[in-house]
Amino acid sequence: MAKRITKARCSICRKRGRETFLYMDRQFVFDVDRARQIVSDGRSPVQLDHDDVRFAVQTCRVNRNHVPHVDPAIPGIISHVFYPQDGKMIQGHVFIDGHHRAARALDLDRPFFVHVLTEDESRQIVLESPSFAEPGRSNDQAA
Image 1: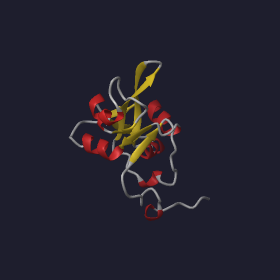
Image 2: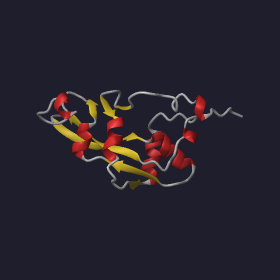
Image 3: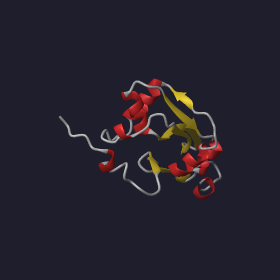
Image 4: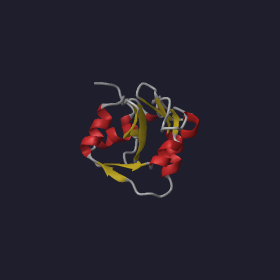
């Protein structure tokens, strides 16, 4: 039987400092603290489809020792992402905050909710991105 790590001893729970989310082998860096500040404006979260929750958890690194310490009632955050490819700007969504909470919701068989940033809000939280976050805009202008 595996020994359970307490919240007081959990390296993630004890972590301090700025929180960021790295995406696509660090090509993108998102400011999670700023995203949390933006979504604290009273907006209502939306329920994330169960299959999307499962996909988000399966495609990232989740520290299973940390999962019991989190509150799945706190919504996650989804950002727009803009990526230059073949001379065009590709746009999609990326789950930037709440992977451990989503894993906990799955474990408890509960729905999981998220806040979805607008395109403009998403641009505000980009700290780093491939050469241009939007046609004609440099990284400095996009962040």
